[in-house]
Amino acid sequence: MGGQELDYVHEAFASNWIAPLGPNVNGFEEDLQRYCLTDHAAVLTSGTAAIHLALIILGVEMGDEVLVSSFTFSGSINPIIYQGATPVMIDSESLTWNCDPNILEEAIKDRISKKKKPKALILVHLYGMPAQYDEIKSICDQYEIRIIEDAAEAMGAKYKDRKLGSLGDFGILSFNGNKIITTSGGGALLSSNKEWIEKARFLSTQAREPAVHYEHKEIGFNYRMSNVIAGIGRGQMKVIDDRVEKKREINQWYRKLINLEGVKFLSEPSSDFFSNHWLSCIQIDSKVTGFKAEDLRIALLAENIESRPLWKPMHLQQAYSGYPAYTNGTSENLFETGLCLPSGTNLTSEELERISSSFLNFRKQYQ
Image (cartoon, rainbow, N blue to C red; front, side, top):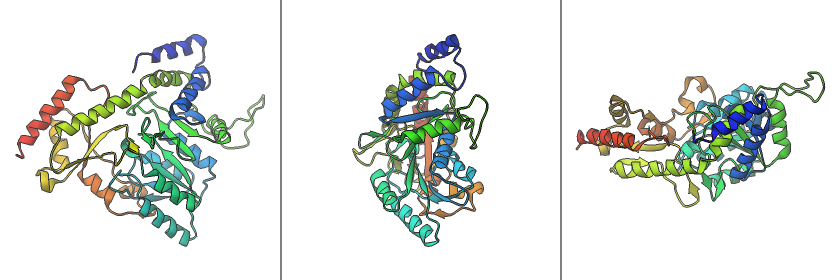
């Protein structure tokens, strides 16, 4: 926490605004609009809820198909299945680890040849690294496919000086406990389309019609963020730029520490890409280093330092094995060779020193 969150929470209690409406909800949405330079925002219970509402508003129904990055968290893909639609998984390219434009176009052409034109693309900006947006948008425009930007891990990151989440037809953010700012749980849906965001607010409050009694003409959801939680979000917005700066500093620290042939960091391809480095991630070529990513993970864990493999691609997961996937081996290789390093903005100098000492001791075994 940054310190100011309690001021807004106390205000919610003092004014008795506890329910999923109130000044903090409105204020948090306005804060997000200003920060992301987007016209409209709705704060919700999760980023997954935001994707779900975006799909509903875009008219995705049973039998439809939606393109989605395969190298991601399950929250990106599950809402497609909630709608009874079919996820079509797209593999990554090796530059940004995000959706491969060439595979994307190949998949679209193939689905159209099968008379199954996808309705939307859920484009993930993985680990805070922007995808190759211009190339992807050009393809989607050509085939009239809407883009939902999954910027759950990428708040504060930019593509050509535009904040991620503000580029597509919809953008989604997450404020889960592990994100760059947190409300403990929560998310947001962003768009330049006022009617869409008004619809999202309506659906997220059980689609209750404006009547004195409870009147419902559509199926709704209990997806609206509470005024208390939104107060935490308003306090967190005060420190978002500091958090991005800290994440980038940690990434630079790791680059100096692990400056080894055979170790490759997820890096910005050019000045068009500005990553928040939500997680500092590496690939390890064991033929060069003499050790695997799993060897390093186990060694760190022995010192009570947690690291994790990169995401296991969705097309390799049992829950999604029956759905179409267009792959090139990139995400599978990343899963086999990659590691996410401790990247919390609350890492102390003592903890960083402990990580450094543990890594250097590990490295001695392979020199």
